[in-house]
Image 1 (cartoon, one colour):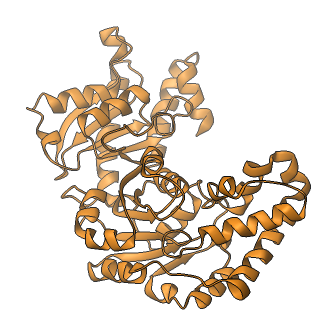
Image 2: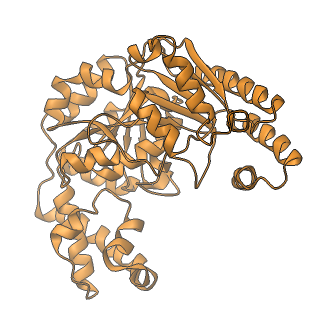
Length: 392
């Protein structure tokens, strides 16, 4: 199976605790004189507590009362789950993890809770989740919380996995964004406060009613998350990026901005190649990715007839190129060097119908940086190359 690991969010995904978190935040806010409707609070559940406060009451309130509000939330949440209410495990949530393990997948739990709170809520729920998974990531393990990629990346690292072989199950757009930014495919469960449209817009590749439905459709979900025949291991992506770097060298030898690209089908065979040809063609749309996509399409569209096509570029594709990749049905986009603010990964939104490609960055970034530095030495007035090198 091309998929090797499945990550799970906790609150709202395995445990029915989102409402309890919202009530705890409301008590904490009320205590300090902030009046925020419960429904508004509920929409922020799923982010780390460092992000919840400024989103609900603003940056000035965060500066004045942020730590106090977070402490008050933690105390209120402990009181709710220990003294006032039961903690419910969603039906078949634990069985879903067991199904993943039966399919040979490694598993990880990814939560913003600290280790003590996690132990407390699982004990109260009577759930053995931490015993079922291979790795646990808490809020203590990541510098930034969701929707930043840090918690998801920490889980991938703990499993010693490749992001291209991982998927994550979650109930909020913040799970989707964190997974997407870490190069991990998101699978949504509609057990939280967000409608399926919001999950899709954030990048969830597919959504399911609840853990029961996901478990019932497990093999189909795993295929959606990783439809290609060739596993996207770190070694395979490095090999493909070297091919793209060779194309970039060819472009440099032709006095073109050294960006190269290749396209493969789901079986991993290269079907299209290209490098930047803007100078030769006089066209600003002759980007490396567009050349590679056109080259692949000229072979009777063969790579796009296979599920799991991959586009590899030595620089993060722009909005035009990423949009073209989506139109072509590319499953995964891999790049070496980030291209903020020109890059499309954060600027392109998933289509209303269809899926947003998995995007994996940072593969052989040093090779791309070296080529661009050579270009910049010859063309010191090239602002685009200068920005890329400054960011790198």
